[in-house]
Length: 278
Image (cartoon, rainbow, N blue to C red):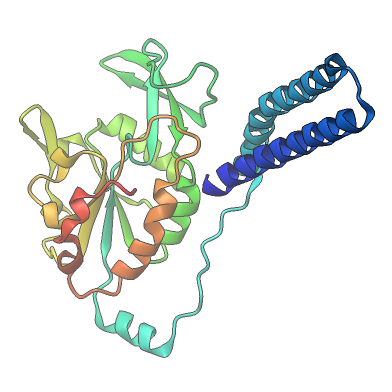
């Protein structure tokens, strides 16, 4: 985003410089040839008109270019071979468990009768999930958070992944199946029946996944979900439809490093739960 802004400002600066150069040239020419001032003003107005048109066109060109970059730019996170020291470190620490929330963390969904204003009209969904709830068929339109497939590919190499959602099982299982996409990386799943109702929300008991709190943490957009385990959580901004979101990519370096710790709480007990960088 910063590079795009710099490019736009640079283009505007170059245009303004050229227009000013043109005006100075016309002033000198008029001075030498004693041309009527009306001719000079006409020339300056023409330059000004060209500048205005260019300034109006630049944002459109930048938006078009930005859209193309977002849609077609390959996403990479370099996985370099581990050094002997790093491999030894991983061999002496326990493999960690990463618990993943679904709604507004990895995906966002809405059903036909509730096309919420959070989704811009015309935004394409990634898949449709049809379920029956209380004998009523419901059709959910599901949007995947940007880079979620790439994110799952990478972190599944580092952690045991567990889905823990406050949604009903019939819905959560369907979403998890789509995200797993026959890769076998989201086998363990916990649903609403495994949560505890508390103050109008659902809290998630991480000890239902494992009793070893040194090797488990949760990625969730809802602080209430991990109220009992603040030192075992990484918060993430709620996502609804922003196609420019990079929160999952931003987390990869942190998750890459966290797997080497003896106790995840030694890192997560710091001020990570207060930040807003994801």
